[in-house]
Amino acid sequence: MKKVLVLEDEASIRSFVVINLRRSGYEPIEAADGTTALEQLRRHPDIKVALLDIMLPDMDGFEVCRRIRATDAKIGIIMLTARTQEMDKVTGLMTGADDYVTKPFSPTELTARIDALCRRVGGEEESAEIVHGPFRLNTRNRTLEKNGDRVKLTQVEYSIMKMFMDNPGRALSREDILNTVWGRDYFGELKIVDVNIRRLRIKVEDDATNPTYITTVWGYGYKWGF
Ligand code: CA
Image 1 (tube, helix red, strand yellow):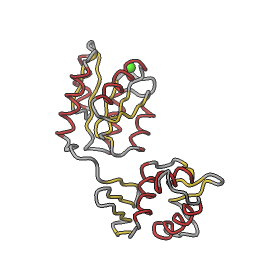
Image 2 (image 1 turned 30 degrees about the vertical axis):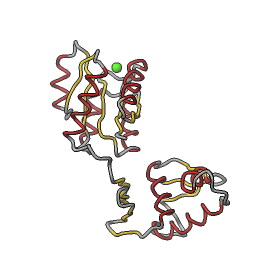
Image 3 (image 1 turned 30 degrees about the horizontal axis):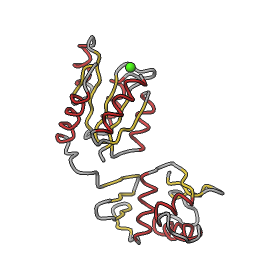
Image 4 (image 1 turned 60 degrees about the vertical axis):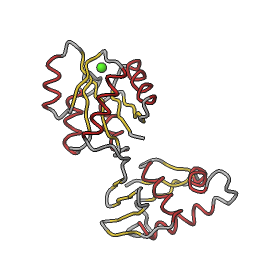
């Protein structure tokens, strides 16, 4: 499912957009202020399109747009402008936005714009790559590279890596990993998670005795982050 960032501080408008995006088959990622929006973009590098409101509690939508564009030329950006903010269109496009929608907008209009932008930015296919630091996970071929070198993984190790890279910086419990990777019907012990993590560390860490990518969250599980 294509991810769309929804940056809007007014909860009623945000949930209206979110509900309609879900209905149209998108996966909305919400933010009520600029800082959260930028954080969500770091957490979900596969976001295809960002919808940016302009008047926000912290930095304004133009500033968010500028910051996104500083590092990402590819993502589609649509500014949500108020009718009275005619100037916003110009400013928005100047800061790197691709399109704008004037409030109040109909769900159909918004979805049509997002669809068009997705096609234009070549976002038709599901993102096949997750990139974090030196790691590149190809979800189509189920392969992992570190600094451009292939890391040979078992299917189970691949699934754990995928789970980690989908959830950077988040502590994952051993139960969560077991349920996601082995399935809820698996009647094994949690120890199998630890065994696989130990093996995975040997493959992905610079120094497996001093892990920096897959860190232990004591008494709980593991975390991907550096
Ligand atoms: Ca606003």
